[in-house]
Image 1 (cartoon, rainbow, N blue to C red):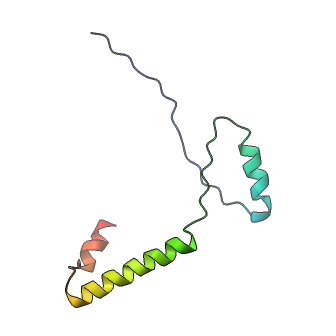
Image 2 (image 1 turned 180 degrees about the vertical axis):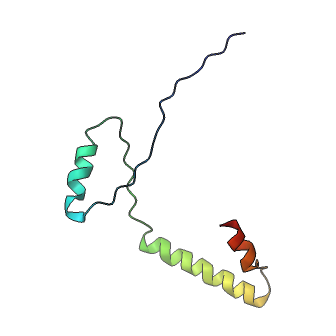
Image 3 (image 1 turned 90 degrees about the vertical axis):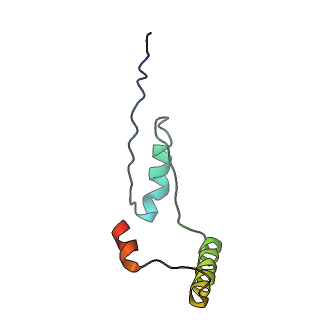
Length: 80
């Protein structure tokens, strides 16, 4: 039985912190290369932040009422 080995090109990730006045120039420059994939991340939207905070407050209320079981801080810190 023969097996084929696929030679896939390895991908690497680069994070760039660019001054805002040069941002569009650098992005336009990088878009000219077909081997560059650009993923823009402007952070969470205001709606996402509000939704996350609302969910957090609901969970906190349930914890205080004893309807939701919490985890010890030590356990959470050990995961980091």
